[in-house]
Length: 127
View 1 (cartoon, helix red, strand yellow):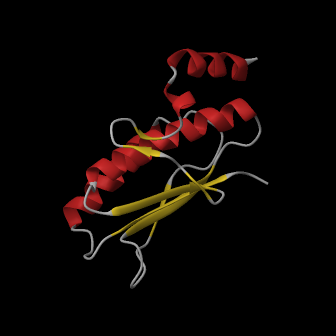
View 2 (cartoon, rainbow, N blue to C red):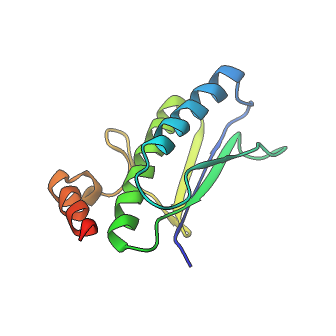
């Protein structure tokens, strides 16, 4: 059983076609650069009276280092998405636990912002 990342954005009006295209472009770029054997980020169709944007993905589960690095990758993607749609109320969580948001750094945990730790995790994953 894998770890899941879920996210949503809500606001009082629907996405414009330009906003939707921009967000889909952000997702496509991050999916293309995802270097792990796992599901990519998916955007679910909007629901009536629900979030204007929502989605989920399974994190890599075969290797704990890949799980950590994959989560960091998706936190960067969610940060870019949230910044592309700043007037929405965003939620992101990993198996029910909120993903921290920092106005300057975006989504993620401090460990994911440590370049030395990230490089070490990549080295450990390759063994």
